[in-house]
Amino acid sequence: MNYKEKLKERFEIKKMCESDLEYRKEVLIKCAEDSVFWCNNFAYTFDPREGNRNLPFILWDKQIQYVRWVERLLKNHEDGLIEKSRDVGVSYTTLTAVVLYQWLFHDFNALIGSRVENKVDKSDDPDALFWKLDYNLQRIPEWMLPDGFDMNRHRTYMRLSRPDNENVITGESSNPNFGRAGRYNLALFDEMGFWANAKSSWESSGSSATTRLAISTPPESGKASYFYKLRQSGRVKIFTFHYKDDPRRDEKWEQEQRAKQSAEEFERERNISYSGSIEGKVYASEFMLVPVRKSKYDPLQPLYVSWDFGLDGVAMQWYQWDVSMDRWRLIDSYFNTDKDIKFYIPFVTGQILSDRAYEYDDNDLEMIARHRYWQSATHFGDPDVRKRSLLDKESTKGVLAQHGIHVQCKEWAGRSHYDLRQKALLFMKKLEVDEDNNEFFIESMMQSRYPERSETSQATTPVQAPIHDIYSHHRSCFEYMADNLPVKEAEIRMEAGSSKLVVNDIY
Image (cartoon, rainbow, N blue to C red; front, side, top):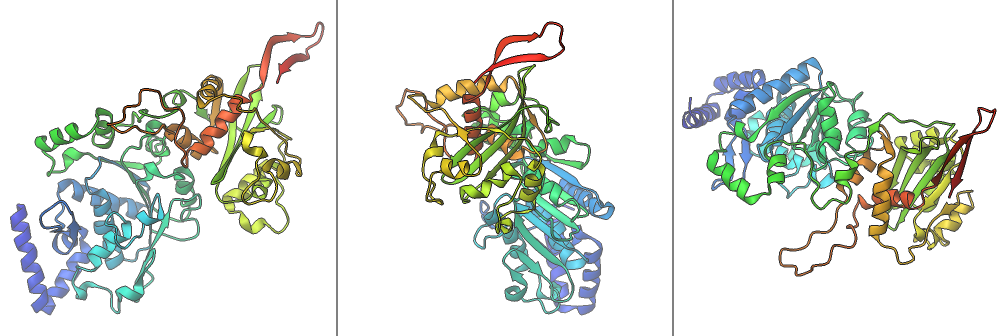
C-alpha cells in the first residue's frame, strides 16, 4: 500500500469511528494491540518546513523496525542506545509511537529528559519534548482520551497524568541524580551525547527504570563522550538510524547538505561519525591522547588540589604524583555554581560545616565522604584567590586559610593564556585521568574553545584567549595546576647500602 492509499484508509477509519460506535470499539482494541496501527491512523507529526505543517504520522519501514525494537526492550527490561543522523525524526517517533502510545493504552510510567530544562518542557518550542506530546494530545479524537482527562488539570509543567489510573509521564533535565527518586518503565535520554552529566545521569536512573533509552547524534567530543563509551560497553542494545534510511532523503538532498556544511560537520551529524570535532578547540586534539582509565586514590602518593575561582562557578581537581616515575593522575574533580566559598571546604576536609548539610545533594555527600580520610593536600590555584568574593565579605584566600587551606599561586606578571597553554600541553604528556569521577572535566577539556571570528573580520592577529563558558572553569583549573606543577630533579639515587629511595624535588 502506497502513501496515498494509506492516507485514504486513514480518512475512512476515522470517519467510520465518528458514526459507528461498534466499529470504534473494534478500532480501539486494534490500537491497543498495535502501536503502528494507532500511529498510522491517528497520530500527527509537525514540520514547519512543509507547506502543510501538520502531517499525518504514517511510519516508514525503518521507523516501524525501530518502534518494534523499543517494544522488545520494554518487554525484556533491556537498555538501548540509538545513534542517529540529525533530523530523521527519532525523538518524534519515540515520544509519539512509544511514550504517548503506551501512556494511552497500557500501564506505563515514563521519565523523559533532555540536556536543559527548556528542551524538556516549553510551551512555545516545538523542539521541547512535552510540546511534541501536547501536539498529538490536542489532535487525537476526544473519545480516545482517558475518561475524565482535562488538559488544564492533567497536563501540568513537566508532567502528564491520567485521572483513571496511575500512568504518569514526568520530565527532568540533565543532572547527576536524574531519575533517582521515581519508578519508571522507561527513562528517555534525548540527545544524551550533549548532556553535561551523561554518565552520572545514566547510572542514577539504573535502579529506577526497567528500560533506559539513550538517543543522540554523535557529539563534538566524539569518542571521548560517555555516549560513545556506552555504545561500546556491550551493556546496551544498539539501533542505528542513518539519513539514508529516511525515504525523504535523496541524492539531491545529500548534495545540498554537503554544500551547506563542512566535511567534518556532515560526517558527524549526517554520517554518524565519532571522530569528534577539534576545530577551534583549545585542547581537544591533544587531550584525546591522555589515557582515561581506573585511577584511584593512593595513600602513599602526595596529593594536590587545584582551584579555579569564578564569579559564576568554582572548579576543583584532585591530583596525585608518582614521584619516582614523574607521572600524574587526576583522581577526582568537582564543579558548582552560585555557592559561597565555604560551601567547598568540606570537599577538602571531609567534614561538613555545622548547619549546612542541607546544601549538599547525594553526589556531594558521597564525594565528601570519599575525601574524609585522604591526606592533607598542597593547594594551587587562580591568582584571583586574593580578591574579595561576591558572596563573602573577605577574600577567598582568607576564608580558605581559616580552615587550613592555603592556596599557592603564581602572578600573571605579563604572562598570557599562551604561556599557560604551553605548560598545560607538557602536563598532558605525563597525565592519566580516572574514568569514573571526572566526567565533566573530560567534557570541559574536549569542549573548551576559542571564539569564532566573523567571515567579514579583518583581524590578522591570533585569538588571545578562549571564550568564557560553562567549560572554561575546569580548563582554567587544569592550567593553574600545570602552571604551579612541582618539578622533579633529574637526580633520583639509591643511598649506598640502603634500599631507601631519595628524591630531591624543586617547587
